[in-house]
Amino acid sequence: MKIMSQEALKAKLDRGDHFKLYMTLDQHAFDTSHIPGSVHLENVDEVIANLSPDEEVVVYCANPACPSSTLAYRMLRKRGHRNLYRYAGGLEAWYEAGYELVGEGAALETEAVPE
Image 1: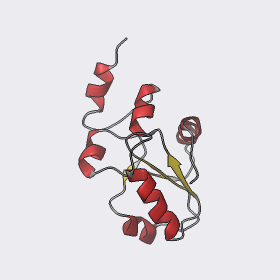
Image 2: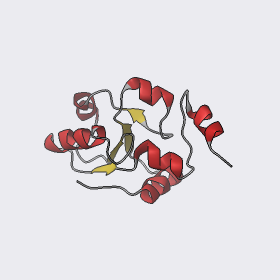
Image 3: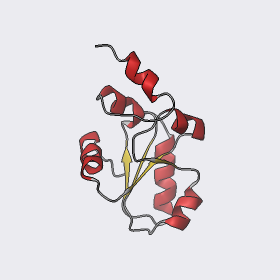
Image 4: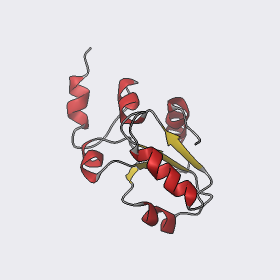
């Protein structure tokens, strides 16, 4: 499994690199909070139908122990996707680093950060 570091993901987003960033948690979790520029991965078949196997894809979920992004990674790899990464830190590490989250609950998370 190829892992993308938090620093590499942040740099790709800041540069505006062309890649697909998928959050693998459920729709409610995505609506509540996600990394800017990411989309909700509804199902792997939909992703495969809409992407070239060579297109760069990064999947993530809640934290390093969350199995959702690992499962999505394995399913995409099994179906021929070659340029695939997992951002293992997920929402938890992104938030702890002080990076922006968007969604219905993102403002509440920002207010809860101690100064």
